[in-house]
Every structure is written in structure tokens, then in C-alpha cells.
Amino acid sequence: MRPAAAESRADFVGRTCVIRTGRVTGTFGQAEVHAEDGSSAIVQVRQVGADDLHAGVVALLYEYDPAGEFFWVIPFDIAMKGY
Image (cartoon, rainbow, N blue to C red):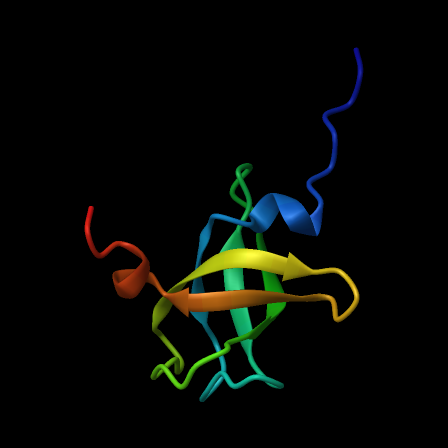
């Protein structure tokens, strides 16, 4: 049997997360995301705009920045508009 491949950070793109810091800016923020196997991770997140992303808000991880080792996020309710 071959062991299952470990998830990479890029595998989290497209998943929802819960913001765990008091705010998310272009240079600061953390969120909790769950992997497919049910485990969770605290990841660094950033946003481009000025959306009210604070502790407890559900957001969408839409891109990973490997140089900065963080994810770009937007509020989940904005991501779902039009669906």
C-alpha cells in the first residue's frame, strides 16, 4: 500500500475558512481551515480590499502566494453572490 499524499497549502485554495484574528488587512491576518481528512490548520491570510473580516467571519481562500506563504481571502457571502 502506498501512503496517501500529504495535502499541500495549495490544496486549500477554494476552501472556506474562519477568520481567527481581530482583523484581516493586506499585511496581517490568520484563519482556520479544514483539510479533506478533517484536520485543521491555522494559515496566514491577507485581503486586497477593506471588507470587514474579523474573528468568526467565514471567508474563501481564493489564491495562495507561495513567496509570502499566505492566502488571499474574500468574505464567503461575497464569493457566493450570483449563485
